[in-house]
Structures are given as C-alpha cells and as structure tokens.
Amino acid sequence: MPRPGTFRSAILKLWRTINWTRVNFIELFAGCGGLSLGLKSVGFELALANELSPMAAESYAFNLLGEDLEALALESSPNPKRTLWLSSRHPRSGLALRRREDPRKFPSHDRGFCDLEDDGSNLRGNLVVGSITELNRWLENHGDVSRTLQNAFGRGELDLVSGGPPCQSFSMAGLRRQNCEKNTLPWEFAKFVGRASPKFVLLENVSGILKPFKDSAGGKFYAWFELAKAFAEIGYFPLCLHVNAKYVGVAQNRQRFLLLAVREDVYEALKGTFSDSERALFRKVEPFYAAVKQEQPIDTAMLDCWDVERDLDAKLLQKSFLSALVRLRTPNAQLVSASDAIGDIGALHEQGYSTHRLGAHGRKLANEFEGVARLPTALANHDLRNNSELVQRRFRLYQVLAGLDRPTRSSVISVLNGHSTDIDDRVWAALREHDFLKETGERKRFASRAELLEFLQRHRTKKRTQRALQAKKQAPATVSIPDDACHYESLRTLTVRELARLQSFPDGFVFKSKITTGGAMRSYEVPQYTQVGNAVPPLLGRALGFAIAVLLKRLNLARAERSRATKLVA
Image (tube, rainbow, N blue to C red; front, side):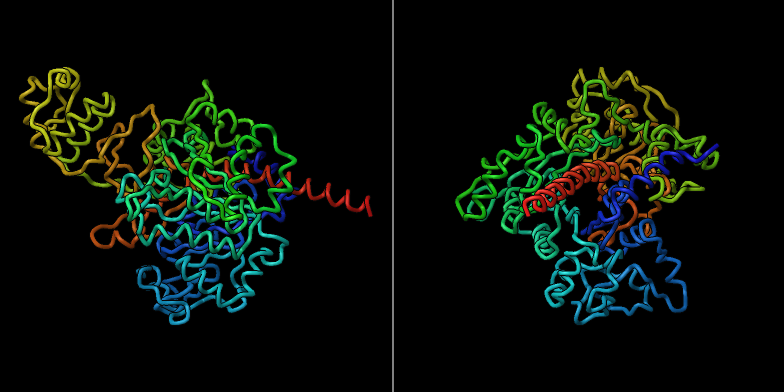
C-alpha cells in the first residue's frame, strides 16, 4: 500500500517550488512548534525561531530542525548546530544542564554564555533559546542584525513574524492581573516587530484577552485594544479576530484571539484587490489607524473584533482571504469529534502502528503534514498513566455527568467540592438511570438517593476542572494538567498522544523532555503535557498560512502590475 498522500505530497512540493521559494517567517514564543508546523506545511520557510523554555525548545528542535538534544547531550563534546542559547549559566559543552535550566535564572546575554555570533550569521533557520525581552536587548546592541532580519538573511524581505505570547494572566481560567510581568510580553513582541519590519504580523492569544481588566483607577483596560494600538503606532493596520479551531478541523472547542497586522505600504498595495467583504472587515481599521498616528483620542468602539460565532461575521470571513478559518462553519459541515480524533489510538497501541489502522482523522493529519513531520513507525508519547481505584470511580462519575445537562452537573460537583450536601429529585432521577463503578469493582446503579449521596461524600475532591470527554462532541480546550480530562470510555486520564491528536498534531510529531511535572517546578518547567496544551493547533496554523499566502500572492501581483505601469510611463 502506498504511503498516505504520496501523490498529493508530490504536487504540493511542486507547488511550493513554483510559488513559495521566497516566503519566510520568524516565530516568537515558538513553544513546541504547532504554529511553525502549520505554516511550514503550506510552504513557509523558517528564518528564525525563539522560545524561552529549554524543554519546549527540545521538542521544536527535534521535529522542525532535525536536532536531537537528548542524544547530543550524551556525547563527550555536545555541540548543537541549530539550537542556540541566547544566554546560559552553562557553556555549550554543558548541554545536559542547559536542557533542565530554569529560564527565570538565565543571565543577561553579556554576562552568561551566549551562542549567537555578533553579526547574526548563525541565526538563519535556527532556534534561539531565551527570553524575547533579552533578545530585544541583544538586537539593540547589534543593530546590523535587525537589518539582516528585515531582509530575511538576504532573501529580499521578511514576510511574517508570528507567535503566541504566554497568556496565563489573560486567561479566564487563571489569575487575571493587569500588571503582571507576563502581560508585557505581547508588547515585547511588538517591539521585535518594529525592528524586523515584516510585511505581516500574526499574534495568537486566549479569548480572555478580550475581557477588560480594571486599572488602578477602577476603569476598564482592554488588552486587545491596547495591543492593536501598539501595532498601529509602529505602522501596522491591525485586524482583530475571535476564532474557533473546531472550524478548521481541530477536535476541540478552542476559541482564540488573533491579531493579523499588515504593514502600511503592504496594506496600501493590497487595498485595490479587496472584495466588498474584505473592505467591510477593514472598515474601522483605517480610521482607527489614522487616529492613532495623529494621536487623537480613541476608544474600543472605533475598532471591531470579528467573531466567527456570529453569523454575519462568519459570512464576511467566508467571502474573504480568511475563508480557511471558517471552512467548517456551515450548516452541513461535519465537525471532528473526540472519538474521531482518538478512537483509533487503542488499536494502534495494542496491535502496532500501521497506516491500515489509522482512522480518517489520523490519515488526514498524516496527509496534511507529510513532508514536514516524520513518518512514525511506532506510537510515541502514549504512556498510560496509573490511576487509583478511587480516581477511577470518580472518572466514571465524570463520564456519566458529561452526558447530562449543566444544572445536573453543577449540582453533583457542588457535593463533590463540599459546597452542598444534597441533590434534588430531578438530579436523582437523571443519575439513577446510569451505572457507576462501586468500591466492589462492579458497575451498578444506585438503589436510593441516600446511597448515591454517601458515595459522593466518599469521593470528594477539591478539583473543579476535572471532566470527561464526550465521544461525539469536540473536546474542551486542551489544558496543560494531565488529570483535568479523562477518556470518554476508559477510566483513565488522556495520554500525551491523545491530547496531541485533539490539538491536530500528526503522530509523527514527537514530544520530548519530561512527561509531566509538579510542585514548585510547575512555575518554570514545560513538560510534554504543557507543551501540547500551550500549542497553537497545527491545523489552525495551516489555515492561517493559507490566508497569508493569499495576501502574499495578491501583493506580488499588485507590485508586478505597478512595476509594469511605471515602465510604460517611463
């Protein structure tokens, strides 16, 4: 049987050769490489990547640069060629120590061990491990390198700077604080963009960035709006979007904020190519941009954030260069469910990895990312975690609750959390129809409400986010703690590979470093589960790549037409 997508891959490679030999991007906050994988799958070439965490960087280097830091660290004189430390407490020969270094303790680039050449000659196509703040400082001290980035290491012009700054303080699931050090990182992103001057900018963040913070005076502070203003100040037209990865084929209800910014001269060249829908998308962007540049008073009413969940917004996007983002936002579209995404993994694990055993979604991912992700010979990152009998009984309860309505779930969770001691007749009527895992190991129904309440009391937990997947629905947005979600069928937590499938990573993408972490190390370690949870879904990155590709093609045509017109006049 031929490899999946072989003919399609050959056509795609030919298409890349003809059309995309000069398309390039820099990725900041690269993580394990989800966005880079998506962009590379449509022909974008990496000019430079930056990531703070050595653990996430290890996965990025292995999958996207072909460099195995784990294997190199075992050599007598390790010397990674494509993974460079901006600053470390350890020399290059201390790679084993670098792989577990606390990034909060990285020294400044002028005091630690720095792998970067002063002229930036070893940056092209490689990964820099270090903070974006320190990278900006390094660029300040090496001005010629900024010009090298602007021309994409001699390739003409930098096309894109992309990335997803850490978002914990913007997240609705976490501690929301306006004056948090991590919340300065999007502005460091903007500072880098000002130096590199790409044609386009793509910034991804959590939906919580759209919710206002309260400032010190009690007023409302909108981070997304201030970020749009920051990009306008450095010469970019900002288009703000609220998207859902499930509409690009990701098996997750994963809503995200996107900012697509277009450099002023590029925007002016593209304006004449816009459809009516595209002009509507930018209808407020132009006056907003003018007001920012003229330092006039502005407020949030002056800028739209288009939301794919609103019908009118979705229709505009469907008729624009962003149509790939709403490919499945149609009445008859078949969204990818949890069982679609991971239902074949059991057979692949038990019977051995084979393309014959791949389900439709697994085959799709193999096809979409063929040529940019490895072809697996075994199922990596599928280590089943041991759960106690008590936890298994709790997981069965979550599986039952997953199929019931929200008030019923809330009532039971309230008892489990110790906030309530009873359930009403309606809740009991819903639960009495289901089998539960008893302490005896049997699966039986409860004979009375009192018996059920006693069971709930014996299985109390302080965890409030635990839930079970529903087989025929999209998973909730992937989280970085492994026991926050359990399988829809098996009484266990999901494996890294299952979470990766829910995020749309192909099976050939291998996650490196530790599987999980705990305690105080959670504040700086980024193990496999966290790498998956923090990643931009590769299929979303791919859809965004197609959108930007459309604009780049139009730009090239518009510039060529202008050049011809200029020659005719001359």
